[in-house]
Image 1 (cartoon, rainbow, N blue to C red):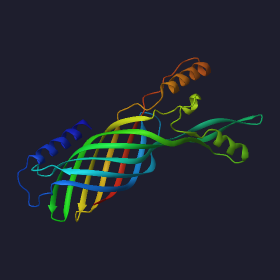
Image 2 (cartoon, one colour):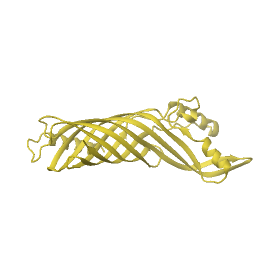
Image 3 (tube, rainbow, N blue to C red):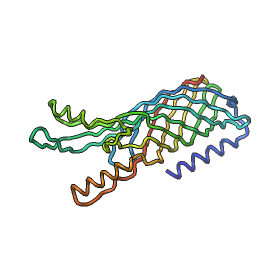
Length: 249
C-alpha cells in the first residue's frame, strides 16, 4: 500500500511539472454535485462490508499556470459501518437458546475532504484526473442493531431492545460504541466528459480509532467476570470504497 501511494504521488508530481498539453484545463473555480454508493468496513476486527450511500458538493480551483494541478474541498454526507455475524444467547421465558445473530452498524457522517489533484485532458471533451488528501468527519447519526434468526414476538422485542443510536452521550455503556470524530486520508480517480459529467472511484482510510474507551473498559470487565481473564478490544478504523457520479456546474 505504501508503494502504491508513493507511485501515485510521484505520478502527480511528474504530471504537474509537464510544460505543454494539447488541451489545457481552464483555470479558476468550478462547482460539482455528487451522488454515489459506498462499500464500507470497520477494519481490524471481525466485521464484514456493508453498502451505503453518499451525497456531496465540491469546489475545485484549477491553479493558474500549473498545467492541470488543482485543489478541491467540499462537504459530504456519507454512510459507513459494517456487519458482524455470530451466535447470541437469548432467554425467552425460562428457556435460554443459542441463535444465529447479525450485528449491523450504520454510521452517518458529515465529512470535509481537502485534496490536491492533477487533471489531464486527453481530448477537448474528455479529461482524466486523480486527487489525494485528508478528510475530517463528525458522526451525526446512525444506529447499531442485533437481528436474531427466530420467530415470535419475544424475539422481535429482543431485536428492538438491542437497537441503539450509533453516536450517543447516554451513560449506558452499551450505547457508547463509537467515537463521534474521525479523520483519515483518501484518493480519487475520475474521468469527465464534456466539462460536465463525471465518474469517480475512490478509497478512504480512517486513521482515528473510533471505539470508545468506555466500551473497552466494559468489555474487559465482562471478560474477567465471565472467563476470569481480561481481553482488550482492538483499535477499529473506518474504511470506505465508493463509486460516485458527479455533475460540474
